[in-house]
Length: 291
Image (cartoon, rainbow, N blue to C red; front, side, top):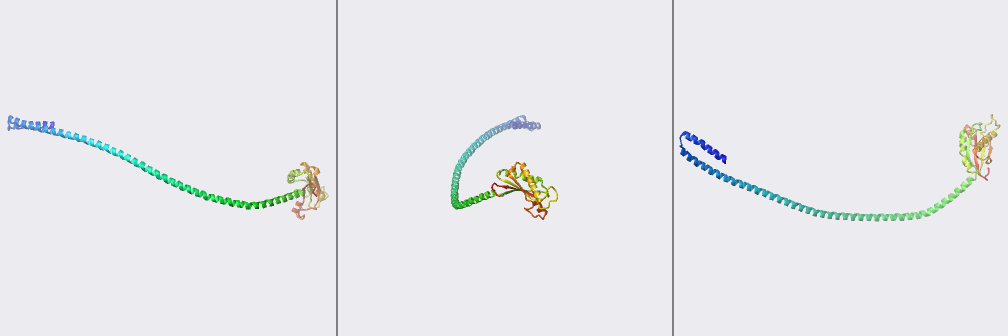
């Protein structure tokens, strides 16, 4: 406002200079005119300042009222929000309790149903087990009778086996048969290995006699130191006796005999048959048995 008044006064001054310069107004008239207008301007300025002050007061009050209203509204909103949260929490807790109760009831019901099913299943299985036990008991009773019969039959069979063993033990037993080459009396490596295999069995029967029986293939003796198949078969038997003595068998237990070609085990008219007949048999003869 001061700026406007100053400008207005400056404008009057310029106008007054211009007017005086033109000679249209004298100095007194101009002063009167100026004073009147300055007064009016000052009055207007004062009124405008008052109005501005009043308006500024209203604006300040409005601002204050607005801030208070905003603060109040904010507090109310917070209170409402807090109350809403409290209500929500309370409602949530109530619902949680209700849901928990429902869940517990449902679980209890389910447990009860499962328990009933378990009991029913256990009863059914118990009935099956009892039936199985009864069936098994009946079966065992029936089998018990059959078992006695079977055991009696087994006992009889064992007695028969014992008799057969005793009978077999009382008879001569062929332990081994070793073969020889044509016109030969010496033991081959294979023959010695076979004789080694029966030494233990002879030692386990100290009361038994050992019969060593020599054989020939019937082919006429044309060379060598043997006059006949009788001599050749005996010489073969003697070779076995000598080997067994060397293994620790008592000579008093051993008897040897040469049978020439009188006891063949295969045809004499074939090479294979004659090879089988050129042999020595070692026989275990239990004490008291007939030779």
